[in-house]
Image 1 (tube, rainbow, N blue to C red):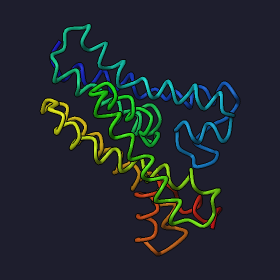
Image 2 (cartoon, rainbow, N blue to C red):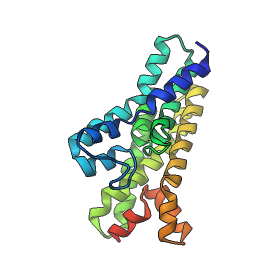
Image 3 (cartoon, rainbow, N blue to C red):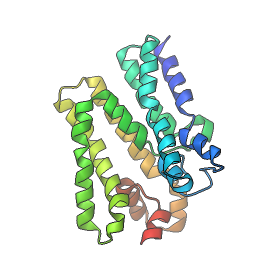
Length: 224
């Protein structure tokens, strides 16, 4: 099968939203509740922890499953890795859900582990660094996890390609992880941004809260 067909197949299959499927089983439409995105976090808040974990796991497995299936069907190594990256894009901009999906965090974790477990282990240390920074910056300890974790995740994602290169991973791994990081950042900045800009004219505030804390203006105002 030509490489483009592998990528198209990976995108179409991975565009099926695991969290939305689970939400529907609980009588919930994620497009109409909470943050209105098709991610595991929104599912957890509106259908419970078990539902959230189940939906998040389905989404998280998309990149490694896409990679394994493409390999089994005869794809070369570069195409296999590209299928994993495409699966993240499909989770974020799914064709079956009006191109409005999740943030890509769960499948991103799975992809990075699949690409290099050692690099992922080292990058995970940055999550703890983010928590420490949040503890220093925020007076409200109840915000530690909701604020610190996204900061740490961002640091870890940004560091991963550099760590992978330092560990001697192949160029395919470094390039794929870099593209995946860019996808996550773009999704953080753009998902539902129109609604945020209807609430405030402070574009800088909106972008900083989205980039660092992965939080919409509505979420920020709810905890201010």
